[in-house]
Image 1 (tube, rainbow, N blue to C red):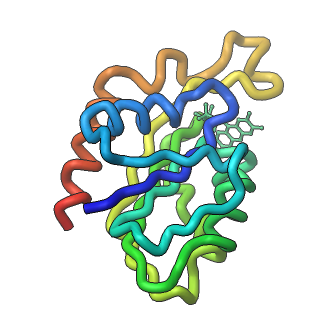
Image 2: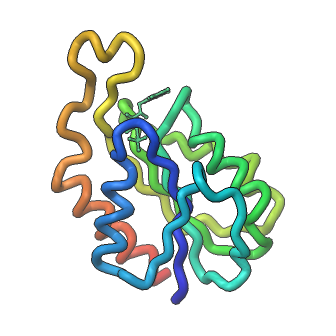
Length: 148
Ligand SMILES: Cc1cc2nc3c(=O)[nH]c(=O)nc-3n(C[C@H](O)[C@H](O)[C@H](O)COP(=O)(O)O)c2cc1C
């Protein structure tokens, strides 16, 4: 099983904490920071993850662009995201992965500390998130979907 995770975590590194914990348990996983690297040959990977903070209700623009330009046909993929709100933001990836016979095997989302705009004035929201349990849940999520 060859896995790669494309990650963008620009606000507080919240999403990266989840990815780092998964990689700590599975050191063979490769990670690409899509804010620094715009292309990679993904044809040799069995499982491709897209991990992102949520900005304006969307996955990071660099992740969307990366998926659009680099995701080959017929791949198994998964999503990880963190946001101030606890809700499903995966639809923002639909245009980028659609039409490629992609199989989405899972989505993990949890809250992440947010100090965007006016929230900074009140000390931020979702303080302390992701917490140890969120991080463990992300590792358990990967363990589960990597067997699918
Ligand atoms: C510019 C910006 C826009 C954001 N927009 C949203 C949003 O639409 N919905 C939401 O729930 N959180 C939003 N957030 C909060 C982030 O999604 C949250 O803090 C996330 O954990 C950041 O992940 P990161 O540290 O990996 O970048 C926004 C944060 C920033 C900086």
